[in-house]
Image (cartoon, rainbow, N blue to C red; front, top):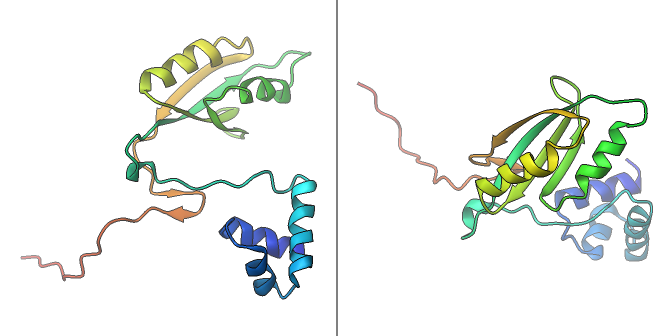
Length: 162
């Protein structure tokens, strides 16, 4: 694995690793590790850093929804055009063009189910190329961005069955 790939994998594991940590884990010196991180950022490979939040542990849990979008393209409109238009909305946490039964997978976040509903019906559905939306509200999250949310106390007693 080359140095860039190794540092990228470590940053995906934990974006809070310091340059000293990265240097120690890769065998690079700190200047090389810092330069590699800067290069990954400058090349647009690393687009940002963020915390993975378990909202069930926070007092004000936002409403999250997965929205499927089907589109019909015309000669002047591309998937990229539609994605650029939808990605501008602050409610959109992620947007992906996917294969399968629908064209776009959209992750939406708002304070209430009503806000998510209004966002989809008033801002997304009116886009002329969008022919169908299907909204799935996220009820619970067990794993996000590779991190398992496991707060269950393990019951180490043996189960007894009659």
